Length: 391
Image (cartoon, rainbow, N blue to C red):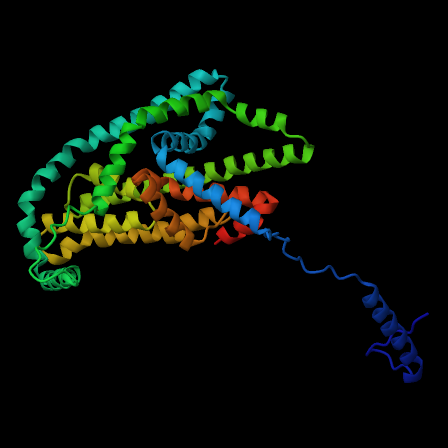
């Protein structure tokens, strides 16, 4: 029986010390027997080492991108319909719980989408035409307000002209440069192509909503092993869950930005809050470049409307503040639990798909990158690439 040593009783040291040593020895043995769980090691990510595999994979990727570029008139509406289907999937399931037939539910959702687009277009058509009519008359005023930029712009133009004329033979006439493909030209071209494929997108969307999980069931049925079937089901469920949550969150936050911008434009005297709210809502779907373009647009609108400089700068400054609060604080907090993406790759994807498909490609770039990451994270040979995409 061990002798307990306390401060309340005087106990002989010789009698207390052995018991203390026994307790210490038992504690040491117990510590030695304890199994410390090893630190969680990162999952092994196999990287293809066969040059033939890498070469053939690169050729397949190039061929796929070339086919997507050539067949953009068909592929773009199909991709847009798939993304819209993921966005509308929660509403589709809600209507099915109310025992609505799938065809009727799909028709109701498509009518809601079509009605929203037509109503928004009708609401902003009149103020947009009014601002377009005011723009030619306001150009002299803009030149006067931005006169301090005239000297740097002229210097830059002269420098570019010298670079262009360098190396040409003396006396040779300067080449007349064709009209450049500017950012706005590409934006309007992409918008026109999107409008031309609108009905194709609606057609694809209707049949995707009606078919439901038919393609997934057929794919699961033809796979050979149970592990493959479970993997495909897991990937499909994760893609649908994460992308639906991403699209719903982004749409709601962009709508909030549009409403806040409309209120700001009304309070600062710019007017036409529905027009500017719709512009802010649409531009916020394009990461980084959209808000930058929005700042420029609201700056020009302020310079055309207000006489005082600080009042002219106020709309653009308030819009920038709204975007920073939404884009740098609220939206990342809402989406960080599901997935994060490398911001450099987001910019590369944005520029690349804008070059491929115009404005619709810029809007679809982040959802397509997120879908790619989710699939790569769950397919073992592609796990290293998925880790590379992670933010």
